Length: 174
Image: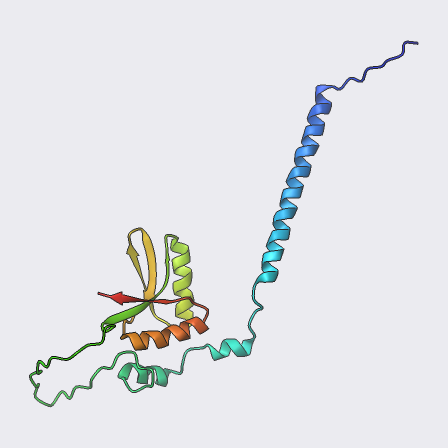
């Protein structure tokens, strides 16, 4: 009987070993991605309770109306009431000194090229009681509050938006 000192490996065996190797590498990659996702989920802040969410709801309708009529403590725009029966008075041009930050301001919530992201932020702001508008500028979609105001009112509104989970910043409206 002849004695063999050689081992022969066929092409099918090589392909089978290579296939198993690729499968193991793919499995390791998928498991690594899953572990990364779970780690990121654990680093997120804990979900808020129902009581905290109720505190962030918009003010009652009467309070909102008072703000727009200029009677509320954090009024956005003071609109003078006009008596329709009184004769119209000529406005007097009086020079007045305006502060350095005088003008009309609004808050920008996001600037993105992703239309879905812009819509998501606008919908979230609407659900929180803030009216928004979306502008397209230089290839970016900019979600801003719909009602401009003076800087002090915009700063107060920014605090409310921050409590609702947004990261707004003031922009001057031309």
